[in-house]
Length: 117
Length: 113
Image 1 (tube, each protein chain N blue to C red):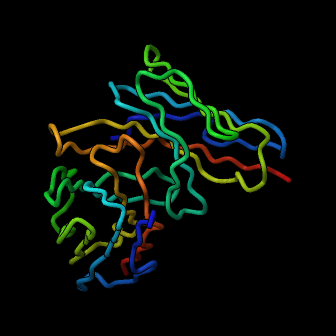
Image 2 (cartoon, rainbow over the protein chains, first blue to last red; image 1 turned 180 degrees about the vertical axis):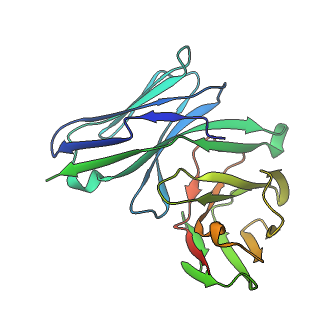
């Protein structure tokens, strides 16, 4: 089952504008991650925010996390045509015990971002 | 080496065929994952291996058989697949429980005819 729900499902903007995507989830998490996928190929890890963090920045990316509302947002500033892709939020859970813990990453439905030159 | 390598990139197989997908990483990650992604849908977890042991099987049909021969390799053996199994199969790896994020391969595009 999919944990995260994203909106909007699709976003179309002009180059230079900011893009904001939102994600909601249902259960407790260890972290929340954002990934980009170009043309149905592999996913690229963009940024991870831990459950005890509220905001994180990486280059043109800004992610926020509100655990009380079980929601996150990803802001891409000064967008470029090369940012055109599908963006997925994914909730990370820690399972297992001790040194052999493993993760479970559950994806949201994704947002298709189109940036027009 | 910071990549996950998947082979082949494309695979077309008949419903009576047996084939295998391969995944390799040399980042020292001890957790490896198989995901399945249908067109215009998010990836769905199939299997998780931790320290070469199967930790999660998300109720995947037995026609998909995972194998982790060592800490760098992950295979997915396919047998008697159905056309609805056509999808992008993604391999990923992480340090333990993914506290630093996951590294994904570029996937194998599988078509079952």
